[in-house]
Picture (tube, helix red, strand yellow):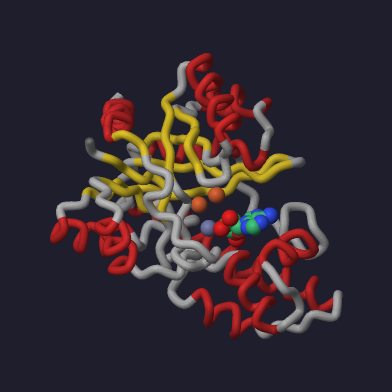
Length: 272
Ligand code: AMP
Ligand code: ZN
Ligand code: FE
Ligand code: FE
């Protein structure tokens, strides 16, 4: 049997893992394919392909985009996109620049709560990566202002919490159309975290093609629920670990994996 983990981050966004480390971990888990789905960047794809080729591990191109509804943040995965497209890179650059501004805004809010974090520390942690809340959370933890990621997100950085700042405005319709225009397959990421099923039909109307049914944060009843929903809406099922290297404590790659048949279904969908 061939297995794939279709949700893996690299240090080009907020994983601690380099492409070398990602592929070494994938090899250890005997995965046949992995999808690189960094937040708002595709920079990790080519370096992973280069190493994947030497190990016989297939790299599926991907991205994880963030869109917002008034009451929730939704993540859209874009599989099998042509990441070399110039217009796509231009759009991503705008979003990445917005992420830098957003960090400064969140730092101001933190300072108003008496938590002083240097911007340079956050950008230092992010390194070459598309900067985000996980980098900021690590800076907060090392400052001693909180004791766990959970505390950081519950008090400060979680959606709607005291120091939360959204990314630049990006409509669900826009994100889905962007993925399709780049030749890819749009899939809603980890819907069990948000639990806003009422939006899935709307996203399907815009061209959403699948649901990430299998995910680290989905328990068995959540998984069954989304299997049923995917079937009833005629959507594909995907799955992945959402591995952030050691960025969230445990190395998750391969702990959620799907049969390669589902990858073939994605490829058929991309051709249409
Ligand atoms: P960003 O792309 O900057 O919005 O940050 C997204 C990252 O923050 C992802 O790695 C999420 O898993 C993480 N994150 C968002 N909300 C939470 C939360 N409530 N608890 C833990 N991690 C979270
Ligand atoms: Zn992340
Ligand atoms: Fe996500
Ligand atoms: Fe993710």
